[in-house]
Amino acid sequence: MRYSIGVDVGGTNIVCGVMDESGVVLEKMKCPTDAHLGLDTVLSLIVDMVNTLRQQFVNTGELVGMGLGIPGLVDPKKGVIVSAGHLQWFNVPVAELLRKRTGLPVYIDNDVRMYMYGEAVAGAGRGYSHILGITIGTGISAAMINDEKLFYGYKAMSGEIGHVQMEGVSEKCVCGLSACLETVASASGMVAQAKKAIATGRSTILTEWFPGETINQLTAAHISKALDTGDTLANEIITRAGKWIGQALASVVTVLSPEVIIVGGGGALAGERIMSPLRQELNKLLLSDYSDGLHIVLAEHNEDAGIIGSSIHARQQLERIHDQS
Image (cartoon, rainbow, N blue to C red):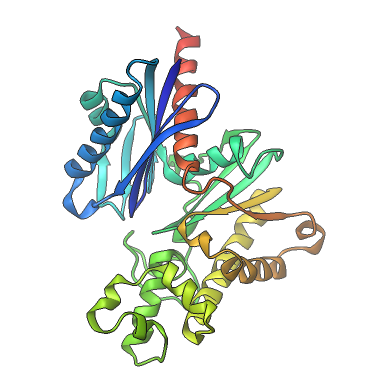
């Protein structure tokens, strides 16, 4: 049996999994990214997880390679992270560094492209030819897949929808710009909006759940739960985030013309709480003849999509090299 490893490096967590030739995830591990501890620490975490999984399958087959999805602007051909603001990685040759530490062929790409590639091939995108995917997590990003082929564009920047400038937004973004979509509509952006409102004295159940300094433990999941209690602030934050994402998607959809939009990431766990305002805003801004046939769905694999896409991508790169030799 020939195995491959897929790694999904997020701003919050790293998920690492082993996949067999039939596309089944056999085993996986998860740990905090701890990006604040620096590049070497994060790479060591990845190597430790790879080695642990490797040992579990050492007697049952061959580990042929690994793929990684990493947030930010990535040069897949060179294996370099050009700019990953949430990780504070700039011009880092990640593929080569991990190849030296593991002895495996390593292929990297943007995390959302890998996540949505996994959904396109083995998840909610099955049966569709033109797929637009968006993830709502620590940041917001998107990917386009046509006939199972990823669209990259110039400098592989395609999909950075989180850095679309939004009217009425002024927050500074980790990318260096201001007014980016993800500063208000990502999971971290929604938390920042809640903290900002609480600091001005807004009444909310969130201050009962997290009094004083414990407010720093607040997550987007807590905001979703607060919405379920009828909390006005939580409703404002999530509804506004959904509308902002719908507005940003309207321009992207008009240009790329997908059949289906897949919404994934931690923020998507809010389900209809965020999907409903997103759909309403998006449909309001599209031609009805088009929007009537557009499908907007939640990701099927959510946590596993990134490792599935990264693993499949690594196998394909290895096969391409084999075919050329």
